[in-house]
Image (tube, rainbow, N blue to C red; front, top):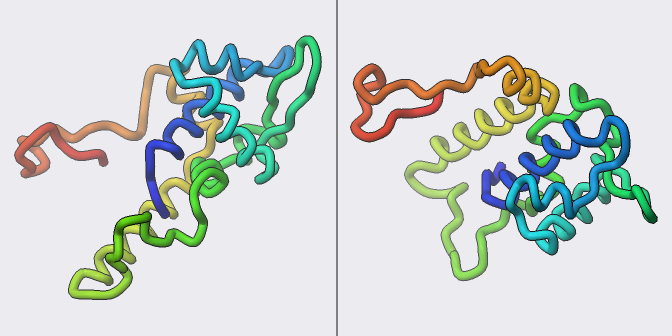
Length: 154
């Protein structure tokens, strides 16, 4: 599974909609303002999210977006898959096929770990962790992890 900026923006926007559409639908203009994301970019992302059945739109005054399912039933992987190319083909200008070659098994295993991790993490879990000021996704300091640099995600 590709983990790109597009998917990250989509997750942030979905979290915003989940938190701000309980009384009335969340307008993309409001999401754009709160999250500092271009409105036109959000419109593109939400077209994909709507086609994937993750959000529903209402038009007119007071219109906007709501989740189509409870946040507990929407995984982060669902959001990434909705906005990314599912085929996971090499990007334009890149002729490298990472599924073949000396480290192919490593990249395949990494992709599987990422997919499982994101598939187990729901929007509701992320919202609850933010509300509690806690996170299961903490950074391990470099000294403990054996890394040089800022650390790694556990």
